[in-house]
Structures are given as C-alpha cells and as structure tokens.
Image (cartoon, rainbow over all chains, first blue to last red):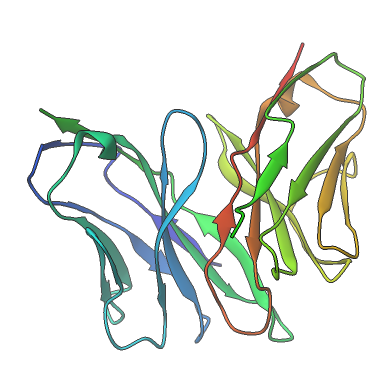
Length: 118
Length: 114
C-alpha cells in the first residue's frame, strides 16, 4: 500500500531563514510522482513543486526545492528565505501508477503547519 | 492560461438534500480528480475521470457520484446528504496520460450540511 508520512505537525521559522519540511513515502511502484502543496487558511490547494521518480536532479521552483533521496524514500521540501506569507499548511503527496499504466490518484500526508515569525 | 475553476465556492444544504459541484479543468487537461478534505480524515480520494470515463474510484458510498463532459468539465453529485458530508471538496486537473505529471487544484467548494 502507498503511504505518505509527515512527522512534523507544526513548525516555526524566523522570517528570512530557510526551513525544511519532512516527508517520507512508501510505495512498491517503480514509477511515481511526488508533490508538495501549500494550503492557506482560505482552503485553496496551491501546487508548489513536483518530482518524478526517474528525475535525477532535485526539482526547484523559485524559493522551493525538493530534496529527493530515493533510497531513503524521502522527499523533503526546503523553503529558502521564508516570508510571512509562507505561513500555511503544507502537504506532501504521491501518485503512483494504476494497473494498466495510467496515473493513479494522489495520496496525501497529514500535513505540516508552518508558522513564520517576524 | 486559466486555472482550475470550482463552483460554487460555498454551499449550505440540509440533511437529505442532494448537491452538485462543478469543476472546470485547465485547458488541455483531460483528467479531473475529486478529493474530500475533513479535519478528521484529511484528504481522501473520491474518483477520477479521464476522457468522460471514470478511471479510478476511492472508497466512498454510492451516494457520491460524478461525471465528465466532452469538454473535460466534471460534476460531482452527492445525494441524500448527511452531516458527515460537510467538508471541503477539491478537484484536481492534470493531463492524465500515462506519464505522471503535475496536478493543479481549484479553490474548492466548502459544503456545510445542517
């Protein structure tokens, strides 16, 4: 069975500092994708970054980078230079492949609530 | 390029009623997936539609159903509403082919059942 584990229910970070949000996953699929989403209090699920299981380079998108360690099955999100607007829930998710080769559904972790202090 | 659009944003219904939620995916995306988010259960997969066919289904009762139209817009229907159906319903849009690609969400529909 596929599973995502986020062990940090809540985290604090000082404005302008970097922060790492942990995510480990479990899957038997050879091909899968790893995702990070930000959900502010408004409820919208904002896509941040994606890493494919066969991608050799770690994904980066602006201030976001994904530290992908395949052997350890971890996909940590690093946010550099935190801003007050980064305060939100952050969800790690994974999507494997269905039998038949099509993409499967997203499996989410329980999330990490990040609070940025001024 | 327009994002994923969900309507309505907020909805209040009475137990026993039915409700229909709508999701318009990003242009060119053929896969629409629906998720339910509650404080207790977190984010749970409802179903996925691709090219007007339900391709994948989560573990929800038959009261939850959906469909997809030829323009890839999708609707989700919940019949005989229960208090426990109160949740944020999110839809995700992606290309949907054999390759795993990004998935983008709409702003969600917040359903309250009273």
